[in-house]
Image (cartoon, rainbow, N blue to C red; front, side, top):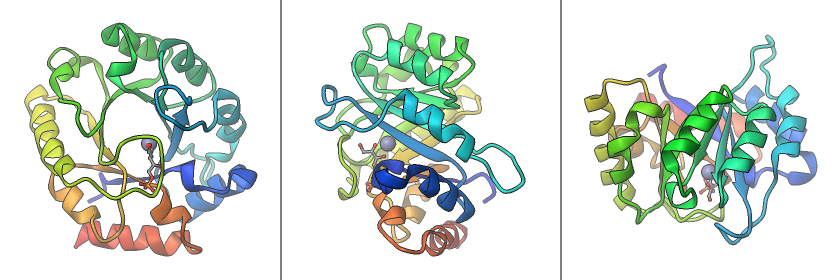
Length: 226
Ligand code: DX5
Ligand code: ZN
């Protein structure tokens, strides 16, 4: 379906050549660029910050000049100061883990006030309850199918039921909200994730771990269309 989005995660890219990696994966068919921000506090790993995001922003373009959305996944605590810096750094979507903000609704509104699309992220053990009072304010729900912090982990199957539950909530809201899944997605399980109701698919090691990004993305699209 044309509504599917594939969002390669730079976490598994070559950090010594990030600009090339962004251009190459867009050339290979990426719809979005997924930007994993880890702070060695909310998660036990450390990646990159807003300065790297703004350095990559000019590279996130297709050959025809159209911008490719930058999908910032904040695994940081606290949330608000970094969210504002990422808004200024050219992020399109900014998603955060509700456990990491003392005032989730305010954090969501602050992201929108800076001109970005806010999202909420749910860890494998986190219920969707916070959506009861936030779904009318957000543009994206991100369901984690691994515990955050590292690439290359195995898909946790219980995420599929959570994707189904999130899809029901989106339908009930009547709003246009993207439903994204992150962790352990590959060409051989992406169709199951889509069948559960997801429309946006993060893949790190499955894409950047292979020499031919275009072939992997094409395999994923074939699986989504089958
Ligand atoms: C994990 C990150 C993911 C990660 C996914 O904390 O949020 O985006 O890069 O990597 P793979 O696709 O290798 O599981
Ligand atoms: Zn992520």
